[in-house]
Length: 316
Figure 1 (cartoon, rainbow, N blue to C red):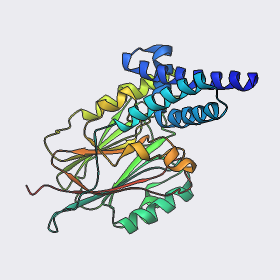
Figure 2 (figure 1 turned 135 degrees about the vertical axis):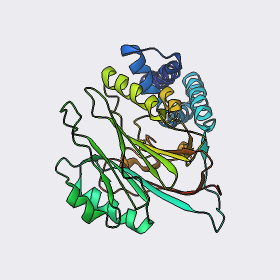
Figure 3 (figure 1 turned 180 degrees about the vertical axis):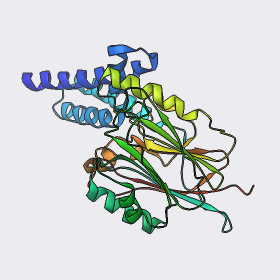
Figure 4 (figure 1 turned 30 degrees about the horizontal axis):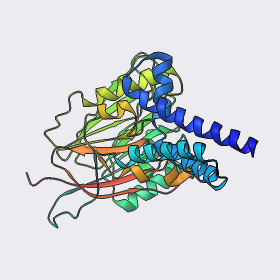
């Protein structure tokens, strides 16, 4: 019983400490401390599950103090998740409303995942498809085969300074998109921001670096606020991407718009985890658009699951 009590206290203390560190992310510290706080900020759902299991196990052994601590931590994390806002659920659109359908996915440099995604986007009737971590050897002529009827194809491969983008982003769109796509590059970074008008809707896509180190977290945090540059939030807009942050990370609020879908009960990464994964892939919108359809796709052979969304344009 003594060793069981020690184990319960260690687990209860661990989830309590992780919860505290995650909430310290709101302080906005930089460097190593800010990076650690940010990492823990994204896990309230998982911390709730672990704390609940510890509370149940300790309670069944009549270890009331660690059970109480774990239960309090579980309740706190549940409150963090349940109080999440800033998202929209699909609503029926007017029959005469004009629709824009988008697909967003990280294919993890997999040709098989890209082919599966292209088939699903075709079946969905997608107007704009945004893809991240495209295969290194992917060429424009291959995109033409994968996405017939989508003449706009933009696949930046290197920055103007010659930096090879080994985690490439691309966007394809049907006729109705502007001929020119704006590309924002970042020095010493694989992240880019792509901007294109489609049928009067401002479409912005991005894939900043994963925050695997303080430097990469800094890189992500300097890129996400720049999504709003040149964006008129009074007019219809869609922002989508593998943004490498959950809604519980402080930097998430720097991205404009309402999130499509309820992030509290969904996960996109890692793909095998399903709803227990992290919601780090997002589609956000605003400027009079309304959400008519939204879903998280199945495992396509990538480490991320794709997102599908349909928006109804305002009458004007």
